[in-house]
Image (cartoon, rainbow, N blue to C red; front, side, top):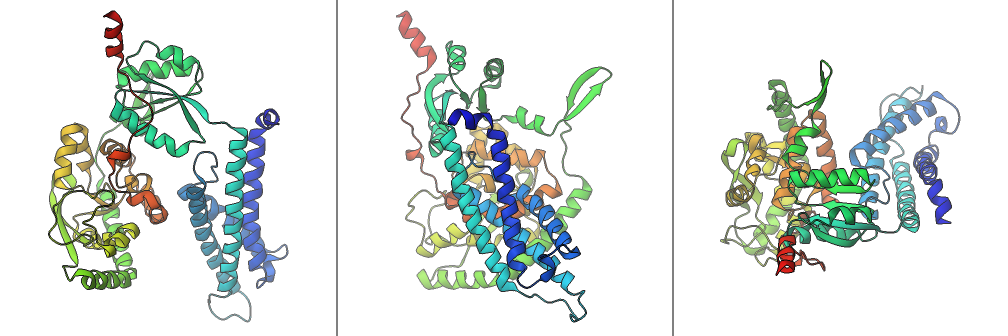
Length: 466
């Protein structure tokens, strides 16, 4: 049966996705049609509502994520689709209410049938949950875990990449581990399905990539600065010579003005809406131990400029200044909740209004961390080319304990591909961070180990000679 499914897999998934999206739209139209007769028959109301749902739905699916079963776990897909559908429902609902004002007996815009909107969303959530779990079950019924060869440079790097791979055991199965200097790489690539190249010098990685391409083997690799520069490069033909052109420059004056206007608008709006959370959190902090409510700390922003970042205090007073670790006894009971929900970050809206920070950008690191990370990774200073942000690409895709190099890569990808539309997309995607349990996962290096041992090739070679 698996053979037959493999033959028509592309058509099968296209059909499943089509049915899935149609059912989501039908659920909205059918439920809302209980109070809007125009949705139950061919009419202008039905046509405009369907068009709005489709266009807005595609827009928010591109922001939050599509029905990509097999690539992500079920819960993240459900969260992404639920947010996309919720935004689509609300906008389509507002459009529908605007159209109702055209009726002779309606004299003004009003929000009606809000209960039906809630019922429609609940039905859609049920559809999403069923299709996501069914889709992942079907995908892994057809596909067995890929046989993977991991090529890296040290035990530390091996621990990091295998730690990530072990969270996706249904997708990947490590069959071999090699030092990138080994002369057995080509042989192993021929007999594997997928190659993971992690923390390998660009020069050595080039040959590995060519062999993977030659033998049609899937390959994953972590990008370096050179790769990030290529992402934003434009195609350019100089006479008959084909080139990639990458202009390395800072934000234009127009971009800076628009970005600053967005910072002021978003921080004021969010500050007003979140005021009740501020007050409740401050009262809880004061009630627990009677200590100060706000916490101030020196951080680095654009060009290494220092400023004081504001946060709601989540740790016991008068503690040493270092990053939080797993089961950190310095964190208070109230602090655990505030950190998990990110409410402790809200006072940074004041930093945004002052101009020390921007709404979207690399997170401001502690001065001690900047020094340590820059010493280990000289490229880390590149993330200081722009103003520090309240949220950013690294916060959406990474976690609190993401390695410095991976944070650097994510931040540089944002910097080198900056656009106002990208900022708006990141602001919408920030909601997903609140739903991710591991987004605030603290540092726990002890658990970053794997059952595979890295054997350095030079040592083996020397041992054979002896």
